[in-house]
Image (cartoon, rainbow, N blue to C red):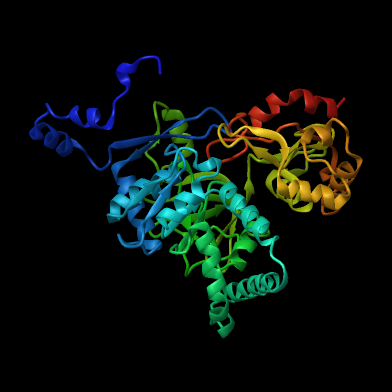
Length: 477
């Protein structure tokens, strides 16, 4: 920091108000109105320039109350471990405003939480509510898988039985069926698994920001950890739907928040339409941008999200894609990005991130990133592969352990396996235009360190396209 005049210790900060009489503070408090702007939160900038979202006192208190009600939270049941930047709106709501609303506790994790120390904090705090972005749940998934891979003999058999039992039982619970005796028999193992993650007191397991992949969701469901996804925008205080232990469906975003309304605009024959939001959570407008505000909210207060979704017969919302996250082929076909990218990661276990490119170009291609280790201090992706990726290579007969060995030496076994995965994805394409014709492995994974990911681990597609323009251009020349 260049100017130390703006740095304060906590004690110095508290002393700043020492010379101000309580009457002056009371006047400031009395002057506040429920419909005035209380907070600015900036959009992530993944689809354009960041905008200042104005949120009122009423937006905050109303939404915090609705969330507490739908999650059935009281001061006894909402100890949370905060680790995401508070510029992330869902983190601010779950870590600050909901606990203030109900008088609960928030424990702040260490600054290097995302670099590996978060589980230590969870074990110490034992939160009853935990919000994890998908990358966190995926890291936990890998850790549990690697630990369980060391099991042998009866331990391995018990773990397999417990997982199978857990998945069957929780699938039945989703349909409202009673839990059988086998659940009580498996509960001891479930408890030990939760304890190893610091989630043994947790009753609300939540994921947000971007969709959770099916493999991770099903894995945790089999361990009696049903991860309920939430859905919302910065413009709706990060929340519009939410799941709880009594209202849960695998890969759904839960049900519409109490007091809010939802419509699906211009639905197709499958019931998929643009998700439009209404309620006390909808923001006041964009800072110093009346034009963008009037374009974003209609006269009745409805906010179009730009996301596509469908509702099932019980009112669970499923987000199926994003209007702006669609590529248009030369023949005019619309190709949704996220389903294809998710399928690539499922078919090719060594792939960490994938980004489809080729909007209005002559064919589709793909940027691929392998599963790299991360520098725990800086968050920078390293050249070394993760243990999971190394095991994948060894299963092919390759002894590669670094990206350099695979990319620069064009490891034929790994490249062949990746092409086979691409072929499997192409078999599910609905037309030749939607098939992936070319792909390239980048030498480093996407990260916040490199600027490719936002604070909620969303892909900054425009930034990535510019940063890797040379690699993309080579595939089209």
